Structure formats: structure tokens, C-alpha cells
Image (cartoon, rainbow, N blue to C red; front, top):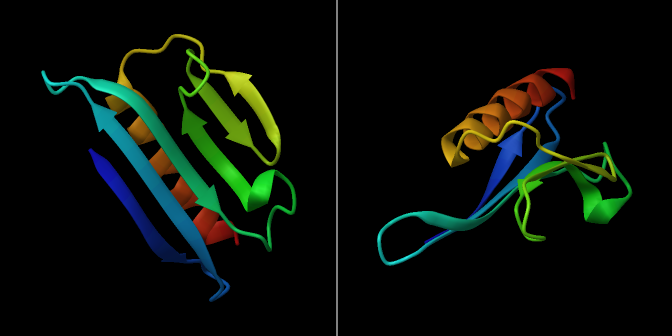
Length: 95
């Protein structure tokens, strides 16, 4: 299990929060996850969550600035994690 919070410094010098929660079963398979980038300067809804991915409702979901949509073509947690961190890298440069 992973449960971490990190500050992420953006280009503007303002920090956002990176939150990772990852749960595994006894065989090491990921059963539940929540990845979130929180930055109240960029998003004032959804508790400041600018970007997030999770499977809290029994399906894979992407959150963007207060709106949620299903992730189509889910190919595994590694795909979600890679997409999340690629989007974070872009956000850091833009904000």
C-alpha cells in the first residue's frame, strides 16, 4: 500500500499537492487507487483537485477541474499512472 503526499512546485513558484493512494491485495495486484493533483490557485471546485484518477466507484475515472469522465480502454494501473504523471509535468510548466 502507498499513501503519500508531496508538494509540487510549479513554474510560477506556487506549490500544488500530489496525493497518491494505492492499495494491493495479498497477491500484489492493485485493487484500489486514487491519484490527485490539488492546486487551489488553479481550481476552486472539487476540493482544489485539478487532475485526478481513481477507481473508487467500481470503474476507472478521470477528474479534471471539477468534472469526471470514465477512462475508456483501461489497460492497467501502469497506463493510468503514466498518463497522470505526464499530465502533471505539463501542468507544472503551465502554472
